[in-house]
Length: 390
View (cartoon, rainbow, N blue to C red):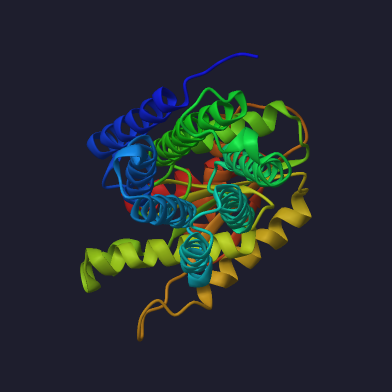
């Protein structure tokens, strides 16, 4: 039988938990949920320190306070996970474990085996509650880490459930708190692993979310939330490489947008662009990729959509804007140029063709959809317009 010194492991566990709490306080203390996880670690460390100091303390106070610290620590941990994963937790799941534990410890103050059994059952229930909370939470780009955390909490819950059965059937193995019990020392090691592993996964969740936020900032237009120019080109190139033919492109321009800015101000102009983006997204949903190229110009790539479908789709986009009331007495319209390809061509070529179609839609009166097979057919229109301006 391997002999491990339980008191040394207890004080080691307390020091590790306090060190983790201090490091989190320095690095991540202001982030949602982290301060409650810090409180959980501090209370776990205090509980283990009390267990280490138990020979020097009054038995009744030490037992009650130790078990209260443990259940409150797990409740703080539960609340922390609720905040981190944006899930509301029933209050009774946070309060009831403390009440039950305090009552049971008071009743069975002289029966250590029964105390360990009931305390283990309560902690097991708390860990299963945490697992269920994680299961109910929504994913924010951290689904695989959340699954790891669920597995961790569930396994530790099973571990404490097993501890309850062991302490009930074999009380001598689990009650040697200040000896060299291998089983007791193993459960202390499990506690150390719980604190370190859970903290590590929480930090990884935070890191992954930060990376996702940085990616969004780098790939999204700050005003509308649509793909920016670079990100749209990247998405478009990928669709062309996937050969999701026929592929259609729609270039969209808000008509007379400068007049909106001049008459109502740039704040209203920004509102118009944001509402246009939302309207486009409602129509497009998952059927295409939309980006803002700059100013009042948007572009949509529509995979597996032929010319007729693309024209109908573009008309739906146009109507969605025409029917939108942007502010009292303010309506706007859009002109759209559409083109389609059935073979691999460069994205620049497609955009050029769609842009020429958009130019003709503007020239012919705005607020309409024009389809183009080739760019050349619009050269004469463009030249004529240039002569007219001169």
